[in-house]
Image 1 (cartoon, rainbow, N blue to C red):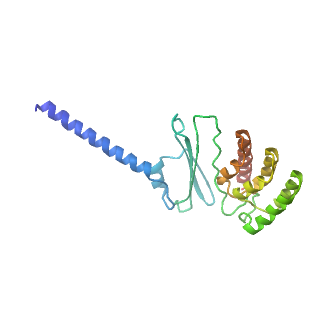
Image 2 (cartoon, one colour):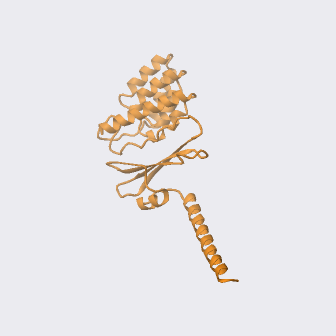
Image 3 (cartoon, rainbow, N blue to C red):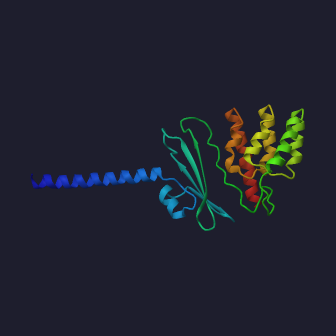
Amino acid sequence: MKRNEWMALIVTSFLMLAICMSASANTYNNNKTVERGMTKRAVMHLLGKPKMRSFDATGDRWEYVKNELSPFKPTELITVVFDRNEQVVAYYSRTSDSNTNRPLYPVLPPYGDDIIPDGTAHYNGPLSDDAFNVLYGKVQKASFADNKLDLLEVACLGCNFSCAQTARIIKLLSFSSDQLKALSLMAPYIVDPQNAIDIYNVFSFESDKQKAAEIITISTSQANRAY
């Protein structure tokens, strides 16, 4: 074999080796997921630099948008939450089909451990199961939508809710217009807006889902400004 042919073979072998190593590394990164306790450095190695960063008294939040321009894969929104020790304590991921006009609903971070949506300096969490069941029963027994909404308005003066609880309550109303009114009453007192998908799923029409997203987003923004 001539010298040039040997050199070409050697170069080709190195290129194939590099390609295999790169493919192996990509497979590893694609299979590996963010886990609780990971450091910022490990997350950045896995996901790259975040598109947006924010922080509050409890720690930092990094947000990513994946497959945003891909015509074949759904867009993925990722939120990674770190504590004050810069370790992962929460991970949220939502997807949307980029081939349709379906809105990409917001992924909202949880409120800090020392505030509730009205801005007061303590955190009560959502209603206990027993207390919620009492409220649920009263709203369920109310004869008309207006009566149900009146009950909710009074309850919201001293209660906080999870997204799952909110979804159960608004299902008690027959019409989406009334459901959105109920959500407007409860949204400022939702303690886990990152789980808003539970609420979006109550609505059948995309226009109502979008209105629900706007209500929750505005309520969360107002709470953060108050804080």
